[in-house]
Amino acid sequence: MSLVINVTYDGSVNSAPAGFKSVVNSVVQFFESKFSDPVTVNIRVGYGEVGGHPLNSGALGQSLYNLNSYSYSQIRSALATDATTADDVTANASLSDVSPVSGNFWVSQAEAKALGLLGNTTNLDGSIGFASGNKFDYNNSNGVTAGLYDFFGVVAHEISEVMGRFLLVGAAVGSIPKGYSLLDLFHYSSAGHRDFVGTQPGYFSINSGVTNLDNFNTTVGGDFGDWATSAGRDAFRAFSQSGVVNAVSATDLRELDILGWDLTRSTPVTVKSSASINGTTASATVGNAAKVDGGPANHHLIADAERDQFNFRSPNDTATNIGSKIDAAHVILAEPAAVPAGSHIDHRDSLASHAEDTHFSTDHVLANTRSDPEGSHAAGTEFATLFGHANLAASDFLFG
Image 1 (cartoon, one colour):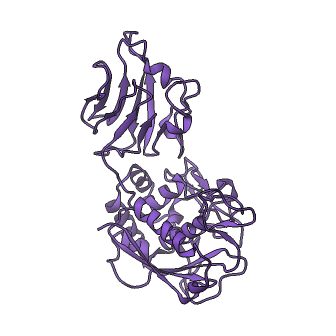
Image 2 (cartoon, helix red, strand yellow; image 1 turned 60 degrees about the vertical axis):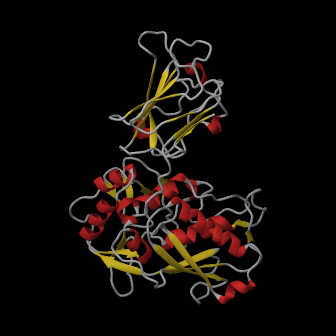
């Protein structure tokens, strides 16, 4: 079993414009493809209302979700058990044995399922609703019409809140004061200093505040758990721009990952090197070495099981010198700790590919570049995993 988001449409949706349901279903499929937790999330969807209640004034979308209370130790233990990615390990390492704040921790019902704190139920986990009227563009494949809003982005925004993407920053939940969410534990004002005030500038960080992955909104009227405008065109931003596509970014997915949702791991790595190595393709799994299929015998893709790395070499081959095609000097960031989401190798004047076709995933960073000590080999480029995965996803390395 993998993640299932079970959507039930309120009667209000009968008056929604054409395209409404198809976009909601597309967002559901998007999240189901990105996360693999074996749980079912039950969500009601409304048009012009949310859970039978009017939307707040000026809201494009709104969410309501059920909360369960757990102790800090229960949450920390669940996160440790649920860890599946490098980010999970890093984030969990930032959590101390004792709660950093005095109060009560709350987890959305859907998030509790993902963390294993709650079993699968058929009970409603949350409701989402969207503004009525001519406000949305229901097809962002060719951009978003001026004056309208990207409906896909708004739906993704609201569903992710039901999944647990919210800050409480000390707010009361019902009659119970001093409420905090799991995301509050990754809200920082500076390195080593957590931020538990919504109106105080703060940011999302998984390594004790050392790295700012995105700033949180501090404007009253918007959710404090949403991104500030500095995030740019992003589905999780507090205040959306019209006329633009607001996509779910790599940072957005990383945020949900450390909140308990398990990112889908794909098939073992396939390296597409059609432009890099004489129009040939190579594939390998970590721990195995493979010759480039159909290529010269001296072209190899080397995988080191102990270091979980891939290294392209073209020994004694000046005609197809990989070093001149994927230039070791043309790397945006060479320090692993400094590589942000979406970083990629910059091909510049190389013959390898267009810049947008040469990427490494956010799970893997450029470890180092080097030239062969004998001086007769092409420059090597090594990619080391941040954490020792058994396999790398097919999307992790794409050359050409």
